[in-house]
Structures are given as C-alpha cells and as structure tokens.
Length: 227
Image (tube, rainbow, N blue to C red):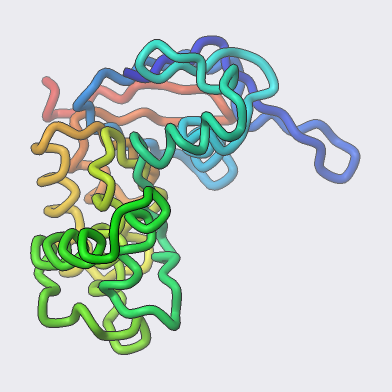
C-alpha cells in the first residue's frame, strides 16, 4: 500500500517557484488501479516520479508497505524499485541495438539471474504478450504497438507488485491502445497495483478509480463504474 501524507513538490523555473504538487494526501491500496488525469503541467508525471522513488518531495512523507520511501538510502531505494516497481513509458525506452528478448532480459540481468534463466523468463513473457514470433527482432523491426508490448513484458520481468505507467498508450492508434490496456488490465487481475498517468478518457476508463490533478491538488473523480 502507498500512502502520501502532505506531499508538496516545488521547483524553480526562471526565478519563480512553481508548485507541482500542493499538500497532496493519497492512499493507494494493494491491487488498486488508478488513472491520474489532468491538464498538462498539473503535476501528473511529478506524482508518478515520487511514487517510483525517483524524486524526493520537497516536504511530506511517502510510504510503500509501511516503509518511508525517502528515508531509505539511494541504494536501498534502487533495490526496492528493482523488486517491487515496474515502469511503462510512452516512449517505450527500448535499447535500439538489442532484440526484443534481450530488452526483456535487462532487469533480469540486473537482478543477478543466470543467462539461461534470463532467456527462459524473457521468452515466457514475450509469449504472454503475443510476441513469441518476434523475440529476436530489433525494436526498429517492430511496430509501435509491438514495441510497447515488449516494454510491458520487460515490466513484468521481476514480477513487480506495482506498475507505474506514464501515458502508456500516448503514441498508439485506437486499436493498439485497446490491446495494450487489455494487457494492463490482465496484470491488474493478477493482483498488481497499477497507477497510470493518461490524458485519454477511454484509457482512464479501464481504471477502478480516477484522480484528477489540478494545479498540484488531487481530486477524486466519481465515475459511473463506481456508482
């Protein structure tokens, strides 16, 4: 479970202080599926970065499973990310000169798995996202939708408890967007917590609940699904 207590994030821009998050209080239970929506510059990506242990807030406290995330050392936080948190990005972030299989192997290699374990796990995950026949293709030989599915497989490599997704369908057409969201929904049904930033209403509709950020302030949106 995530808990954010009085989290504020400010930074300077051209000599002015900008408040990206303003006294944010948020609880995210295990196996929740949240969509974070709001206008550009409202603090969505900042919130995701703080949840991912990549940006310490200016003030406030962030806990994951009862541990204060930013009281951990950098090394401890890095290890926690490697074990518990997976990331999905709009730009896929695949290594251009590595095959799909090798891209999925990266987190497995970093966690110390043997070469055989890495390959077997990567192939298993590529099969899960329907890409067993593309395992040895380079990213440039794959469509954008296929590249995002490789990224989804890589996200699952270390069996994370939490998936943080930043505009995961932003570069995709409507048909491929649906496919990617079906996979994320499957991962949620496996028991994972998903926090997703999106500007797309159809994508947000997959979530169990929606949090709107307006000028750094969180507002929960009551949807027809919850009614």
